[in-house]
Image (cartoon, rainbow, N blue to C red; front, side, top):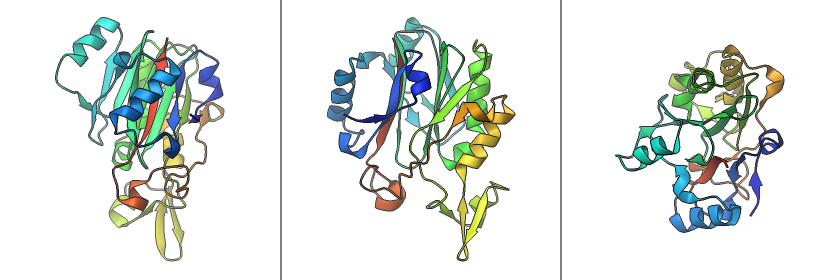
Length: 229
C-alpha cells in the first residue's frame, strides 16, 4: 500500500503519511483496519475526532489521557497535539490540507485538518504555536499531504476576501493559493521557509490518485495519520 510521507519525519521514527485513492475510502472501517494492520500500528492507540472546520486543537500528553479522551464523548476539533510515544492520531481529507508540524526530535507533533475556514482562522499558525507551547524544542518542521491546489481552488469574492495576497486571477475567475497562506502563517510562528514542505499534489486535479469532494461531490476520503512508537 503506497503512502505519501516526509523522509525527514520518517528518519525520526514517526510512522505517518497520507493514503492514496488505491487504498480505498478511509471513511470505511475495513480500510482503516487494513492500513494500520499492514503498518503494524495498534489502531486502539490512534485518536480520532469529529472534524468541524475550526481552529480548535486537542492536546494529549500521555496514554492515560488518550484513554480518557477515548472513553468520553467524541471530541469536536480539527487539530491534535501529540506529546509522547505509543500513540498517534488520524484525520480525513478530500481537498482540505492535512498538515503535520513537529519539533526537532519529533517529541511533540501536531496534526491538523486545515480546510479553507481553518486556514482563514489561522489553524496552521496555531498548530505550530501549540507544538512549542506543549514542550516542543529546537527548530520546527512542517509538511502537508495532498490537497486542493491553486490550479483548482476556484472561489467567489467572499472567500477571496479572507486571503489577501493569495488570490490568483485567471480567465476572469479567482483562485486561492492555500500553500502561500500556510507558509506565511508558519513563518509567522517561527518556522524557516526551508523547513516547510508543501508538495504539489492536487487532490482535485488528479482523479487517478486522490479523492476530491469538489470534483466528485462524494464523501470518499483519504487518511492522514501520525504514530510515534
